[in-house]
Length: 168
Image (tube, rainbow, N blue to C red; front, top):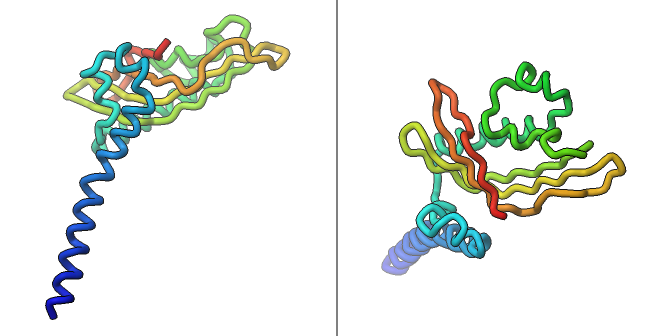
């Protein structure tokens, strides 16, 4: 009888230990992966958000804006038709291929890390790779695995990216 209670107690302790340590390990791994030179660039307090465990709502907001950024990066129409086809995109316009002179093709990969919202504003952290190719298919500009910070604001019922900051 005692043996059964010991097994249950050990299981409960193990589940508790895993539940507590896994989020901490994820935060530590992310923090260390991007730490240099990003901690100095963004400042320690702001940079510490990278390990923030976002709520489902924050994750939904972040993924909605990430999907919009991917649509912008994949857009191949003309500059004059962009707003009528995609709507207002705010600072995500940075991801239009035509913003870099000489680009005939752009490949962008954006990976969500976390989102932290406080009231009507917040931040989204992501890992981004944006590469620009000329007409000969040669990559002439861009960056890989850049830690990127989006400042976001809510306007009415919709969230917008107001500013994009990429590490140099």
